[in-house]
Length: 599
Image (tube, rainbow, N blue to C red; front, side, top):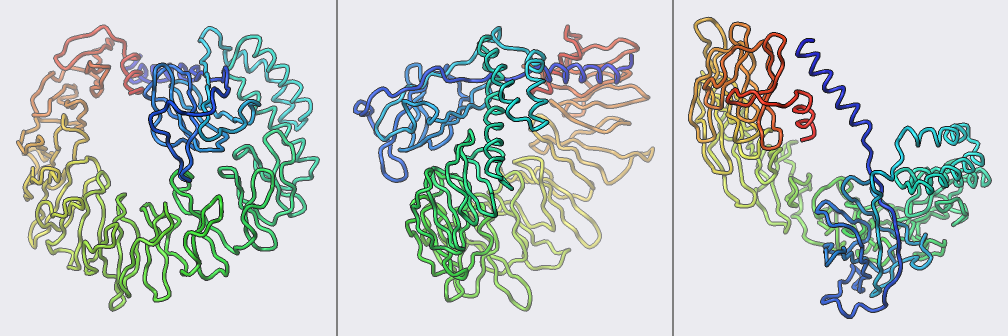
C-alpha cells in the first residue's frame, strides 16, 4: 500500500470513529424553591430594571467550559459544590452547556413548583449526566424509532405520537437520556401539527420561541404553545416572535405588544418598528419606532416606555453597525449618535459631515464629507472627538488586529504616503510606504515601496514598532508565518545559476538564513519544513539547516501530538513516525494524524 493510500485509510477510519461519537445529554433530576429571602448573600444582584435577582443553586460537577445563558445577570460563581446563577425576576428559561453534553434548555413552566423565578427567591436545580454504560447505541435507537419516523414523514401525526410514546417508555426503562430529548421534541412537534391542522393554519414557525410558535390562519396571525394549545388567537396582521415574555404585534396597521396570555401591554401606536442590534435582551432593551414613517425614536422593548422621542430622521446603516451607537439625522441634517444600551443621545457631528461606518470594535467610526464629487474621509472616536479630519482617501483596519489602521491620504498610487496608525496609543507605527498588508499574523505586516525604477519589499513588526526586514529590492515576494516558531519566507528577486527561484529565511529579529537547494515548496510547521533534493525528501529547521537528510521516498509536515513533535515518513514500503532528531517512535500514523486533527 502506498503512503498516500495509507493516509487516506487513516483519515477514513478517523471519520468513521467520529460518526460513532455522540454527546451525552444533561437532564433535570430535581428543581424546586428553597427559601424566599436571600438574606445570607453578601451582595444581592439587581437586573436592568433595578430589581433584585433570583438565585439558582445548580448542582453539577465543576468545569471551566460550563456556560449558562438566558436572563443571567453577571458572572456565574462556583460555591462549594454548586454553581450560583443569578437571574432576572420573571425568567422562565435557562440554557446549560456542559462539556461533551448537548445543550439543555430548561423551561421553568414545565415544573409546577417553579413556573418562573421570583425576585429574592432561592431555587435548587440538580442536573445529572447519565453514565456511559446506561446509554443506548445509535443503532438501537434507530431501530426503536424507525416506524415512528416513517409515520411522521407520512404526516400520520396521531400514529407517530403513539409510537414515540412507546419508544419514550423504553428509553425510560433503559434509564436512557441521550435520545429522550429528540423523542420528546418529535412528540411535541406532532401535537403542534395536529393543532395547526385543526386551526387550518396556512403558515407557521416550526420551532417554538420561548415556548410559543406563531401561525397564520385566514391571513391573520396568532400563537400556539410548544405542545399545540392555542395561546393567542389569530387576530393580528403581523407578529414578531416572543422575546423575554412579550411579542410585538400589528393590528389595523399599528404596532403594540402583548404578554404571554395575549394581554395588551403597549397600545397600538407605531406604524414602524425595527430591532436595535445586538438583539440580546441583557445587552439591549431598545426598539426603534416611528409613528409617521418619517421620524424615529426609541422605546423600551418590553414596557414600551419612551426613551427617545420620535423626532429624528431615518438612520444610516444602524441595523448592521458593530459599534456601541447607531446614527440618526436631526432636523438640521446633523448625524446624531444614540447609545444602543440606553437609547439616549451621545454626541452630534458638525453640519456637512456624514456617518460612514464603524471601524473596528471600539466604536471608532469613519465619517466623510463631499467635496467636488469626492468623499473625503476622517475618523471620530466614541465621544465624537476628531482623530483624523475629513481629508483622507481611505482607512482600513488590519484583519488580525483592528487596533491598527492603514491610513491612505489622497496621493498618486506610486507616492510613498501610506502609514500604519495605533488607535489606542494615537501614534504612527513604522515609516511611509506605498502599500501595507498583513492577514496572517497579529504582529507582522508586509510593506511595499514602489519607486520609479524598483520595487522594495519588507516586513514591519507593528507591535514592537520595528522593521524586521527593511524594504529592499533583493526581495520580490514575502510569506508571513503564523507563529514565532516558524520563519518569514522571502523570495529572492534573482534566480540561482540553474534558473530556479532562491529563498531566504528570516527570524522575528530580522536575522537572515539561506535555504539549501530545494525542488519543493517550503511549508513550515512546528518550526520545520520539508525539502526535496534529487527526488528524495528531508527536513530543514527555521535557520535553513538540514536536520534530516534527503533520504525519504515520501514525507509529511511535522505536527504536534501532545508535547511531542513528530511526522510520518516512508522508506521503500516502510512507513513510520519520527521526531525532528530522526528518532523512530512507537506511534502509528493513524494515531498521530487523528490526534493532530483534533487539535
